Every structure is written in C-alpha cells, then in structure tokens.
Length: 300
Ligand code: FJE
Ligand code: FE
Image (cartoon, rainbow, N blue to C red; front, side, top):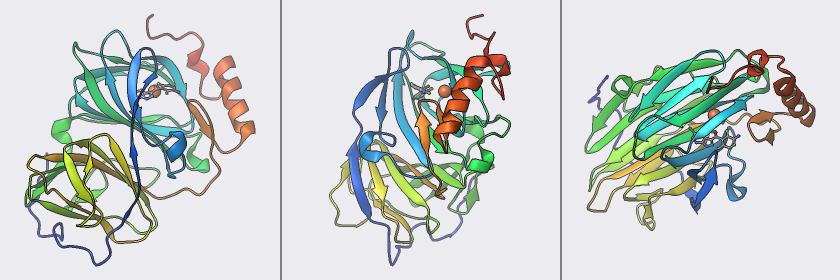
C-alpha cells in the first residue's frame, strides 16, 4: 500500500464544480444464473456514457453466479466489496478475488470464463464494463489483478481513497488503462468534503455504495446508496460534502469518450453489425481468439 498526506488541492473548492445532471436509482434485477444485480450504466435510461457500457452492483450467494460466457471488444473491471469470487477462463487462467481486490480484465479479441462465488454468505461488488477503441478491440486478452493491500491508498482531512485507476491526492494507480479511465473508491467521514479534479472532456459518474452525501453543489439535496449520479461535461471536477452523521462511501469513474459507434449484442461489443455477426460466428466455430472455446468448460 502506498500512502500520501500531500498538500495537493484535495480540499480546495473548485470555482466551477461539475453539476449532477442525472440521478438514477439502480433497482435489483436477475442476471447470470440466479444472481441479482443493480444495474445503472447500461440500463435503458443510462445507455450512452462513453466509454462506459455497464455498471452492476452485484449481490450473489452460492449456488448462483455467472457460469461460462464469452466477452469480446471491451474490458470488465470487478471490484470486490464483500466475500470472494473465483474466476476461471478457457486459457487456464484461474484465481480468486476477495474483499478489496480488483480484477481488471481486457477481453480484447476474446475470453470465455466463469465468475462464481468462492465463499459462503453474500458476495458483493461492482463490475464495470469499459469499451475499447476500434483499434484495440481485437488485442490479445490481458489481466491486471491487484490485491486490496496493493491498491494505492491516500487519506486527507477525513477522506480516504482507494485508487483503482488514475490519480487522487497525488497518488497514482499502477493499472494501465488502454481506454483512459479513472476509477476510485472514496470513504468520507462526517463533516468532510472532497474536491477531486476530473480531466476536461471525460464523461464521469458516481455510484453511491453506502451512506448519504451532497454532490455537485453544496446546497444540493443529498443522495443515498444505490444511486448513480451522472456528472455534467462542464467543470473542473467532483465536489462532495458529507453533511450526515455516518460515513459516506462511493465510487467515482471517469473516462475519455471514444466517440465511435457502439453495437452491442450481450457480451460482444463492436463498432458494426457485421463485426457482431463475426464475433458470434467466431465464438460458435472457435476462431479468431475463441479457438479454446469449443472444448472448454469450467466444470471439466
Ligand atoms: C454477462 C449477463 C450477465 N454483471 N456482474 C449477460 F450476467 C453477464 C455477466 C455479468 C456479471 C458478472 C459479474 Cl462477476 C458481476 C455482472 C453481468 O457475467 F456478461 C452477460 N453477457
Ligand atoms: Fe464475464
């Protein structure tokens, strides 16, 4: 763990903070096999937040889970909040991520895998899907896996941040983001405030994990857990005040828009319908990155 007590302007208010332009409560829905997710990004009401495709807050107990399924054309980032998940793919890559750990998976041209609970009780976490640029959609798959203890952390004036990607309070994550992205987990103590810069032109949103906070403007109405807040394009960054009597925990994600056409068919995200057709054929016939898909099963 790296720590910082730098005097970077973590608590200096912005002249022009980004406003909250959309607020959405994520309601529970069924996904995978018997699993429950609260989807925010990727729902009808929140479809295009380029480069983000989906954000699910999952809550899963055995025997439910996400059995063997493919991905092509984007990245999945799984961040565990509670419990453990075992991941197994068709190349023999296998591992378990536990509370606080992150798996940053670049599916590229193709991965087939299963994601299943590894312990009793309820496993909770966030899974974020980040699109890849046209030129990167068919790259070799890659994993970046970080244990909670290795995730960069910083603290300042009652605000603690775990930096999954990007930089906060002068501390940078080692994760390589092929699509430029910042992703962090903030915990704010009662009475604290935060002013986190966000690069100009990047799309940004907040997902509240726990507690209640005031986002964007100091006189805004507080927002509570399971809400997704989309930030406006204009402004220097995110301002937050915890005026409540309990800790506030939320994720902030921002990314540089790709500005390319998005054609999605379930787990395949490409630029054209022809490329989707190709992906489905490649998966079916075991070609162009899906060679190992035909004989593989996580149960074998
Ligand atoms: C998927 C349906 C799915 N959210 N959150 C269709 F459920 C999935 C899928 C997930 C998923 C996995 C985890 Cl560990 C956490 C998730 C959806 O696996 F990929 C498609 N296409
Ligand atoms: Fe998956």
